[in-house]
Image 1 (cartoon, helix red, strand yellow):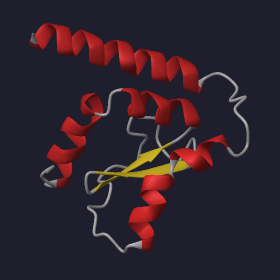
Image 2 (image 1 turned 180 degrees about the vertical axis):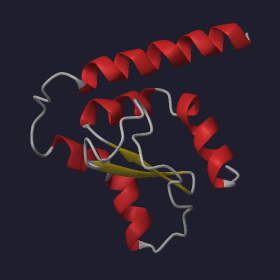
Image 3 (image 1 turned 90 degrees about the vertical axis):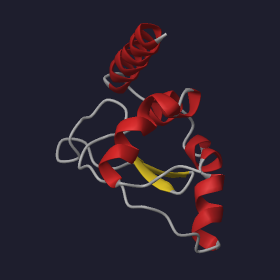
Amino acid sequence: MKTLFRVLSLVACATAFAACTTTDNSAPGASISSLQATKAADRAKTPYTKYPFDYCAVNRTPFSKRPVKHRRVFKGQEVLFCCTPCVRAFDHYPEAYMGYIVAASGHTLP
């Protein structure tokens, strides 16, 4: 089971990395609707744990090379991304990425 999970995680990372190297042709307003939960949390002043790294949560590209383009708050943990394909990969299977983020931040998911 662990091997299957690792393989799926690696495939998800590889897919997201390949997607980040291509041109993002999504509509300009497409990412706005996908951030509704994060914006609602910001309006409600919901506390969250800051993102502990200086690189993208999915493909781990440093933000010095590609700036932060998207931000999410997932179960009280802030997550930062470099591009829309990385957000989509995270949305598809967030548990694959949250393990190391939560471990580094010391936050516990509900």
